[in-house]
Image 1: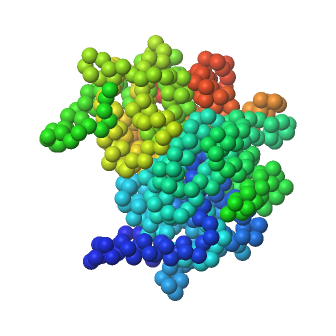
Image 2 (image 1 turned 180 degrees about the vertical axis):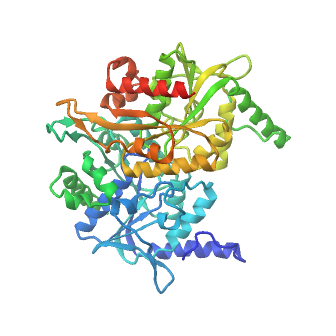
Length: 278
Length: 278
């Protein structure tokens, strides 16, 4: 078993440098590192991360998804993955294979009980997240999708510092209070000097399953407008579909179960935009 | 102007004790302190806080609402409040009057630009939040509704430590991934020894504005079931209504504009349950 916290090593400076080197090595053969972030929680950041990763893998790219959201590591549940990653001969963790082109790993595997809250102060989180990232053996990848904690606090800051060459994909919903938080995310990226890859608007409208009419749950178009105003790339809009929630809860693959849906089409389009810009 | 960060005082220990005393005094005449929290962001925590406070005030209680969500202080926008609170003769801040029975104050007034991300490490946040709480003169109140940052990290921990006798109202949406986070919130409360007042299920079903049929956006009933399983009080379900989003964005009072709606009725019922248990 890999220990998140070890005993204090004899030479702390050397140990720090070794950990930084481990992170660099783990991520060294990855062409594009994308941190999926949101200024606000509950905008569907994780389901967007998961579905973007699946759409990229379905398009033939080698993809990894890494869940570093300490407080809500939902990737394993959404992918229907259980069990622990295995240690390979280099004493590193092999990500769990989800499909031919997609592997996944979550910090959940290294936290206590599933229902336990993690109440750690910042510096301990930094150490845990860095250790986790450095312990995984990704090999060669076209895209690593990193599901990051929401907000603009300690945790996304930690991830941005550890993976310095990652680019941000910001997920938002269309309403004004969410967009205010997007502007905060954009300023966050500027402050930590992280390049912004683009913006995705999620939950933009729902087609009533009974009558087929469109319902603007959270308004619409606000994401595209904000992208334009702030000069960042707009990667597309994903409609709301209750089946995304149901599939996420049960760990079923939405894009397989609802291959002809508007949401699947939207994710394919977003993945094309990401691959083109990558 | 009140300074969030001052110079280092000559006697740090004395200064700490003075700050703790200021918090105690500020909150001393308040009968019920309710921290509205959620394991996950985006479940409508802030719109629930605001509408619960309004429903309690409309029922004749003296209510305050305090926004301590450093990373997404949305209360002022949702209440349509602008401007700065004024200093009174005791050198304390008077909360801004929203209606006869409701006053409000937000940490937003004391943070930099509205669109700037606050990238502070834990200890600085603790100092800022404590200073803010201690600087407000609430006077006598039946209920203080505290809109807390989402998750189970540094910030809700800070709020729980500063307001030790507050009780938690947990807001969730009905889907399983949200409920997993609720169980984390419950364990969080146990760990920090904060009494749980009850659970509210938000966004539980939407009546299609075109055909009137019910749509289960995020499933339904999961909140009540989780409350039952974990032995905590269930305070009620609030349906989804796109007008709540629109009113929150524009700062209009939803319960005034949609007085006969199912959501207004639900908030009145939840406020009654809160008042009865308070």
